[in-house]
Length: 209
Image (cartoon, rainbow, N blue to C red; front, side, top):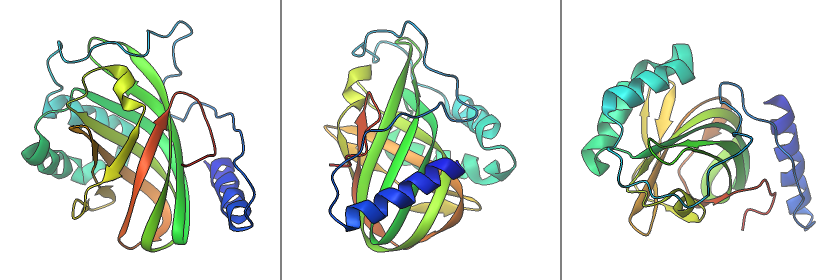
């Protein structure tokens, strides 16, 4: 995580001087199984399987976040009241930084019940009242995902979706009726209201656009 934070800080400096995107290779985040050596096809249908129950998500989140997960049940309940039950979720880690305009990079694995596990990377800018830097373990709940390949697109932030309980924070993003809800627990200071998007890709890239 420290290496990822240092790299993101370097990218913020480079972007400020107008230097182009960089290529990157990333290691699997702690607590996340590496992508299988023979991964499933990247566009397997997901809707045939039943969604994950709240108990399944909460149990997974408790194991993933550990001691700081006391507010997870309330966050999952809040998300469920708005978007129902997820049919996929992502476990991973990310790092970000901002001085009004910011960048965020992450990596993890998308889990589904019937379409296998898929390695994903995400990048995105944010603009708003936002200062500082953070590194976070991130669980993303995915709602109404029609197929695994549908995760590879831009998801735009939903205004007013921020929700905080204890050491966890939730926001929401959407595109084409798919909703992605990142739940983050991290260190450092990243305060303020920001709007932006996340772009999911099958390979690591420093280009957030």
